[in-house]
Image (tube, rainbow, N blue to C red):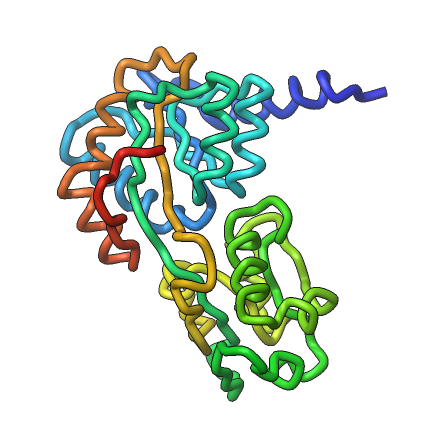
Length: 264
């Protein structure tokens, strides 16, 4: 019988096996990051190594909820980048981050996307015909109860008075990139993703962007974890806040949050 504790041990062993390849020297810090950051952060990791000569960070992507729960259960990470404030707040409440290192690093927006060759058209406002746009299909989202992108989508639909008409038509995925893939493959006629995800996937196009006041501000906080001992972790955090990384984030469609940038 596999208990929750033994399952976690197996999961961490698998992660460790991935993070520490045979013969690796001086491995870089372990970064847990929201799935929507993958395209930009992969580029930044390469840039970090090229500019500093230091080992590449070991990047692990998933929904912010899954990553936060792994951290709560003792996963060996040095830095956490969340796609919303709630999951960072949850770790802060359990004294699992170093609060003095926390900042709101980035901002984003959400949009409805369709396959690139779709003829779908939609205006996101009260009374919008989502059922007609779905044409019998389902709306791909990240999980609306736990994953930040899904939570933002639900909040926006509720604010626009559209939730009742769409809540039973969802195809919920474990993270936003998985929802994006459903649309890119044509398995869902529409999906809700970040605008940065849409920009990273040529097989989809944006049909409509949600009004910014229809959901809480989309902020990406970052912080060092309390138990991190890796000497390069603070340096990599500084690199993420610096001009070289900022240029990569902005080129990938992220924006800087309004001041102050210090996390709450």
